[in-house]
Picture 1: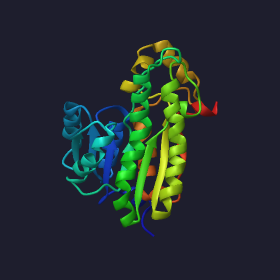
Picture 2: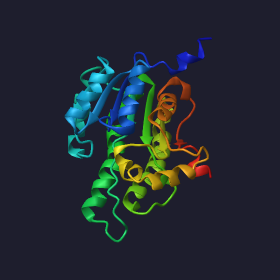
Picture 3: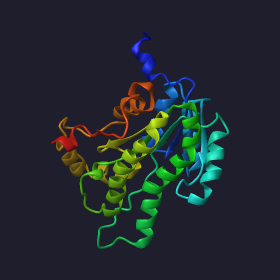
Amino acid sequence: MDHPSALFDLTGRVACVTGASSGLGRQAALTLARAGAQVVGVARRAEALDSLVAEAGTNVTGVTADVAQRDAISDLVARVSAPFGAPDILVHAAGINTRQTADDVTPEGWDQTLALNLSAPFFLSQAMVGPMKARGWGRIVNFASLQTTRAFPGGIAYGATKAGIGQLTRAMAEAWSPHGITANAIGPGFFPTELTQAVFDDPDRAARNAAQTCMGRNGTMADMDGPILFLCSDASSFVTGQVLMVDGGFTAK
């Protein structure tokens, strides 16, 4: 029997991470690269991707693109597959939260949120599963949220997409797991990212959120490393259709 650590070795795997320019997407890209994967980070900001590549080294490259542009999906897949080959691993970390209240939601804000948070993970996955099927091995990791199951103020559009991610993940598993492709989601609690900057800019609010967890603290970037590596590796070979909450016990309390 191989050493158990071999279950987490991603040497020879190719990963595509959307939203890789910052926050949890950037952390995921770094983690997968350090585990041996060749990683293509996708984001709209070229300078931020350059910073990621500079930190990660030669097994990471960046592709500047807006994953919400559905008519450009085929071109994006070709660009992502060019450096290292077609990805085995697809992590959907790109997202937006307009924080518009229910009375103030605009059609533009609603459509933008659905396009990036819910439609992009499906259509990009649909376009990339072919080579995974051919290999009989693939990993898809979506990003869920506390709002997958909880309602937060100013989160009606965001929460709708994240509830949709929960069902999308299960439906992906039903459709593609017979081909060796697992589909799971990570549900982060409160982590210090650009998306949650408004929360962490308010120390009292951040402290209240920490107090609602079982652990009494908010997340750090390192807290995401183990879960993302687990769901992207052979360690999770019999796990599919699940939402793994990485929230310090926020949803358990």
